[in-house]
Amino acid sequence: MKKRILIPVMAAMLSLSSFAQTKDTVTTKPVAIPTGYVAKLDVVYTKVKGWDGRTDLYLNPNAPKPTPVIINIHGGGWKSGTKESQGGFNPYFKAGFAVANMEYRLSGQAKAPAAIEDTRCMLIYLIKNAKELNIDPNKIVIMGGSAGGHLALMGGLLANDHRFDTNCPGVENIKVAAIIDKYGIMDVWDWTYGPEHKSSSPKLWLGDNAKDEAFIKSVSPISYVTKNSPPIFIVHGDADPTVPYQQSVDLYKRLQKLGVKSQFITVPGGGHGKFDKEMNNDINKSIIEFLKGINFFN
Image (cartoon, rainbow, N blue to C red; front, side, top):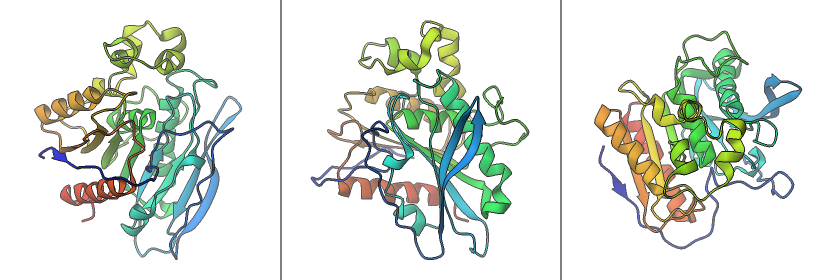
């Protein structure tokens, strides 16, 4: 698919997967659910060494057939952020999606690859409980921004590579229908040591493995891109001061070279998320159109 350019206009609104705050300062965003939907908050999807991994599920239990579901993953450099900071799910409700808005272990709780393990457990939880939740396990979309974009890419690109599934074994056929990557990190080594590295977050997350190139490669989404990767939608501001825009450029080039269905939207002058209201609306519309283009809703 061809690269599209959207021109931003001025208005104020946080994006769906905006760079999140710490739990001490975050303002909870109320989620208005449509008629027929139910909210199941703080559902435990995994337990690890005394930590409960929780997710907020927004479901349509009486839909005549199992619904698609989108996993939403907050950002925060793997060191901060909460699921309660997330909102803007209405476009996905209108398209018939259930939503799983997840939390994961931050670097102050557990170092890499803990957050990846939790992301995989969220995906596996939905597959295992698909019938009870009235969701279609063949129509799972995984989405995130910044560090959440990295986790969305890892969760989806790993597919049936189970190296990070040790906390949630028992599901062999793991796949997602599409990945939505909002200004995410695709090469952790480059973000840690590359010419544009500016953040202390990756070294904090990597911990004792901060200089282990093989380990860092294993937690980098670019390592798992193949011709069989799921369709990927990418959006990134070309003035992002946190995650280099070039990360998304390089990912898109690799996807195109391998023939993976993909779309890349550049936000001219856009920073690290926090796009304005009209831009967010345009991005959400483009995501739905992208999914239509891969026959997701058929």
